[in-house]
Structure formats: structure tokens, C-alpha cells
Length: 322
Image 1: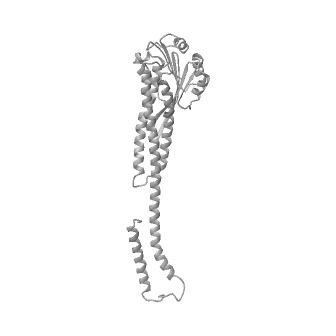
Image 2: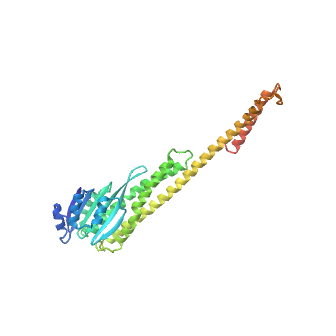
């Protein structure tokens, strides 16, 4: 559906116009048309394609979604794909997609999934007419800046989750399901890295002034967003490496705990083997066993069993097996 349709003249929003008038409006000097769509139907987007002469390959990508972050050029139109991220609940992120067409006097945004809403971006820009006078480049910067800024709370919450996992992994007691949780969070971080890292190259191209739509006045703003993105990418890399280390450490801790349990089991088995051995020998049905008819044989055998068991128990305690 078409979420919003606006025409801006010299940085100020013009009275509401119909969709059919938008294409004609963008031909006016100093005018900008901004159309926002959310998961549009084929018919809705076909009308936009025809009005603004969008390339069929870019249109196909915009309709299907599930694209990696990228920047492509089709004639005089730029096609930019952004991945949005939102911290939904512990160990869970939600990802969306914003696909942007930027041309001479127009910008078309298509959102898929739980993408970042752009209504606040539009309202903030409308309060900055001096910025809107730069045309589509100003809108493009505002959208990219919003998407990149939204990575910050995601990183903050992930940092809290990872710190908690680290404390549990090195705790004295085993936490049920910890390995599965570490692996699940690592998968989320990998997806976040796939959303941020590929965007570095497109933003670098937008910031270096190779496209006419991004004029010199707006380039510093793109360089600032580019720096913020690089920090997010680096942080996602650090999270991925840290989770790998935590996972390895947790597996090592599990192995150590299993070895400790095996030592305890082995120690108790050794202690129980002594009375079992003595009782087994004297339980054999032979008449000529030494001391078989000794009057004090039974209590002495019990004392020997108890003494050996106590001696073995104290020995295993001293070597920290029990």
C-alpha cells in the first residue's frame, strides 16, 4: 500500500496531490516527489514503475525483497537496498528491508517486513526545509541515517545478552540449555553482520561524490553515516568473535565438569571394589579356603573392608577426586 505521497517545493511540502499528478510535479524545477510504500501489490507498484520509468530488474528485486544490501545504477536512477534490525526480545532480532529508488526529482521507498518506519524521518525532514532543498539526496541521507542509528540500540542490547552469557559460561554451576542459547545468539549476530557489512561499500560510494544526485553539500553527511556504520560493523565482528570464544569456553567447561564427574564415579567404584573383592573371594564354595573356619574371621574381614574403604576415601579426597 502507498503509505504516504508528498510533493516538496523548495523544501516545503505542497498541498496534497493525487498520484497521477506526482510525475508531472517532479518535473518542476526545485520540486521533489517522495512516495512511500509498504509491501505494495503488483498493480500498485506497476503504476509507480510506469510513472517514473523504473528499471524492470530493480522493480523485480523491490517486489520480491530478500536482497542483500547493495547499490546499483540503472540509467539515471539509483537503487539502494538497506537491511533494518530491531531488538525484539532476548536473543532475538527482527530484520526488515527498505529498497529505495532515487532519481531526478523523486525518491520511492519500498518497505518489507518489520522495517524501520519512515514517518518520523519524514516529519523531521519537513521541519528542515533548508535540508530538503537539496532534493532526493537529503531524503536518502535521512533514511540511511535512521537505519544506521537504529543499529545502536540493537548493539547495546546484544552487549547485555553476551555479558550475561559470559557470566553463565564461567559460572561454577552448569546452566541448562546454555550451549543452545549461545549458538542461537551467534546466529542472530551473523545475520546482523550480513545486514551491516555489505552496506559499507555502497555508503562509501555515496560519500565520495561519484553520483550527481549527491551534491557536495550533502556528501559530509553521508561520510558521517559511513563512519557510524563502520563502528557498527566492527562491533558486530567483535560480538561474533566473542560468542565463538564463549561457546568454546562453555564446551571446555562442560568437558571439565564431565571429567570431574567421571573421577568421582571412578573413585567410588574403586572404593566399592575392595569389599566386593574380599566378599567375592570368601563367597566361593571351596572347603579348603584358609581361615574359613576361623572364629574371628567374619568381624576381622568386615574391619579390613571398612579400613581399606576409609583409606581409599581419604586418599581420593586428598587428590581432589571426591
